[in-house]
Length: 449
Image 1 (tube, rainbow, N blue to C red):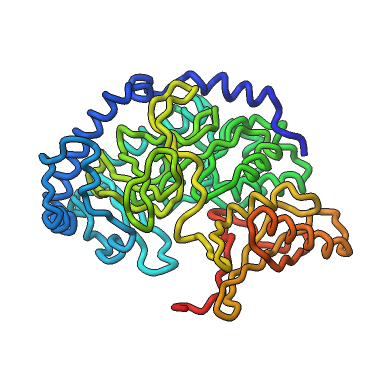
Image 2 (image 1 turned 60 degrees about the vertical axis):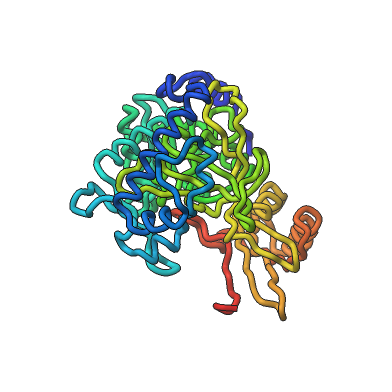
């Protein structure tokens, strides 16, 4: 598969590297940005203390009042908030506004328990739309572009977030949602979409089906892909860029603090700009809960600075990343989150070795003879956890080669990740395709064990 063409790279960088949606904010000197954050942090604490009983009690126990915060470092005096707090106070116990005064509710799927419910005032929605417009512009989208939105609509925040951000930008939205992949391909081509919004795994599924249909999306109008909602590796980025002919831009967000649009890469693809005028970012050691120095990997913690309905104080995201405040070549002053390696609660401990699924993905993608589809199966083997890997043969690979390919994959994982795995090679099309967030791990361990 040919690599992304240089004219598309040049076009993406020419339109995105030195153009801003809101230049004054995006290039604000860091001293001014810090002063704005401190002012908004105090207002957020006052909102939380006045209107959310849980936050009021915890702030009182910590002996903190908003007026006592004299620097951003004082945020360390605040208690953490975790996802369990949302579930324990289901559905509206962490809201700072009565439900009747809200404009919208979103919720997680609740597949592992009660869903987490998030609410927005009309002002919150306006803020979100503005941030997503900034995010899309930073990624390379422009007013007048046709934006094909394949993020899921409904209670999931991805579809609506991208939709209203694109409208605020002045783009033309195709509200496709997920599924009906054949029609997705037809509309991308027929409508001349320049921007594709999707999960990276679904973008890959679109590319794969297009190739099977004989449609070369590299020759379409697509130039920019805004991908997020799941961890993905640099290897998968290169695969998507080669097969779709786009510049693949990473977008980060989570429903608990807003939705998509919390941070995004620019055309430099050198870390995601976290929008610091609306969020305060920290990185902590997930074991000691102590702050880590800049550049050291740890758990990302986010405090919202402008949300009315659901202020979040030091929310532990469980996402593992690093922070850099060095100014980006694009000119933006907002800090960068270096690529999210995975979630601390997704990390597997295999015979004493810490492993993220994205590490195995990085090994698999690009190996000859296999397609970019895989699943990890985790099972209890005696007193230890073991991982087996299911991969899919590339189209045209004969069955007699499966054994040799499996041995090569196992060897690569052992040498590059450090764990021994049993590898099974399946025929083309055997593994499930995702229309949203990909399910990469099948955990067969006994519950509670």
